[in-house]
Length: 164
Image 1 (cartoon, rainbow, N blue to C red):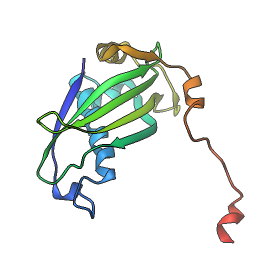
Image 2: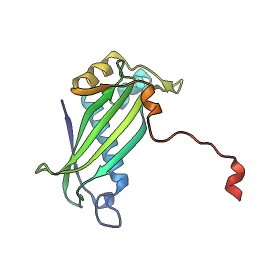
Image 3: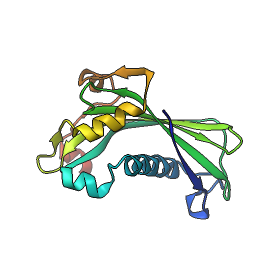
Image 4: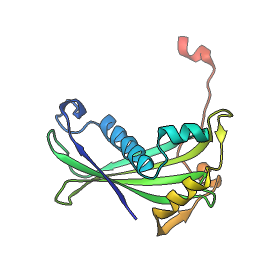
């Protein structure tokens, strides 16, 4: 199953080049995920009751065609990867014009966290059931090992470096 969410591109969504700003792509993906979660009875109120929240750990984009002001854009959401207990997930978002032209693709890898402990957690069965509805035969099984494959790792520096 694929979830779709429609946006009308506003003036404030544009950058200096008069096309959809990179930051707007991030916001559209986040809003599409929240619309998906609300539709599947996992909205902000319910997440608060459960004491969990979604956290994006890595996000990347590819752009194919510009999107301009006053255009309609449809953003899809698919579950591309998920751990067996749904604690780890990867969404793929595709940006389309109403005539089906594919303008961009985004991939977002995340986890569910316990809001009190601030640690990764297994979501309630309701979340697992909702996520399972949007998996396809191509959805891969993910694990903590997949985080080791992400392109960036923490690399702390001596704070004295900031004053040189």
